[in-house]
Image (cartoon, rainbow, N blue to C red; front, side, top):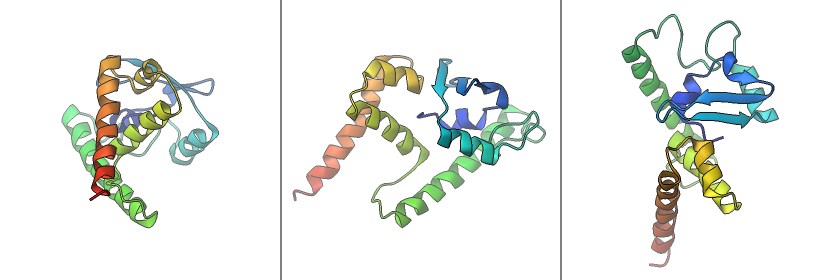
Length: 153
């Protein structure tokens, strides 16, 4: 659902209710409510170890107590995930600098190209306004156009 990496890391079992994911976007404070697909539920089931910890093995409630410890851990794991995504892109022969940020952009772009209104995309991403979402979508589209133009030369 275009969820930001830091928000993913902070999810707990309490964020899931009746097949839906509820969380507050850390950056904007917006409440997000997403339906959990079978694939998303399967991923959660694979990584969630039970108890009172986080859904994914990124943060540990006993080791990452202070804000600095959590921030350092998030930075480290995000770097590892983005490095792994680059390997995935190579294997898939996709000529994209694949990162979690690009994945978030791709989510928004797929919705836009599918005819989903910007207001809905804005809400699903937890942006503070539709204007932010439009800038977000336009910047990604501009890069694609720039890359396409290079093929003409």
